[in-house]
Length: 173
View 1 (cartoon, rainbow, N blue to C red):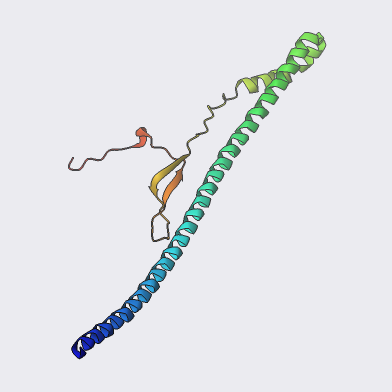
View 2 (spheres, rainbow, N blue to C red):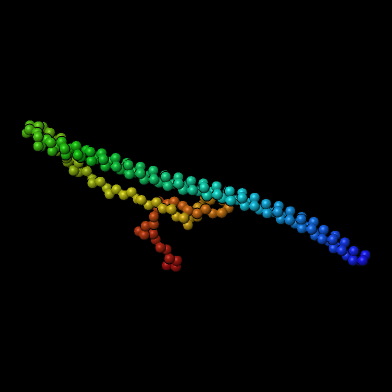
């Protein structure tokens, strides 16, 4: 009986030691998991802030492109409207003079009106106004200036590839 009691005491002591060690292991695992969870939280917070900042930059680039293109259109529209107004004024005045004016009135305005008509008829035709609508989001392009550990994707571009301006270089020839 004493031998059996000693064996059981030994087993109880061993079980208590294992239990204490398992409790320590449990605390270490819990601490390590909390530490890793905190690292993940910090990283994801940083990454999410970077993604949000990238989103703001993309929006800013889109708005800048919008403003530049609309401003260019507005400036060209102002020029076209000015030319149209000037030409219309001369045409209306000349038409009215020819239909309603007396011979004396017509003769007194012949020189200045002919000068204006000649000047406007010699004006260069308005160039073909082309505002490129090219504005693209390229979601697979890596952002060059990403300060993050992980790369960010997606850029805005207003450029297009023109086959006229591309040269294919072949090695060995």
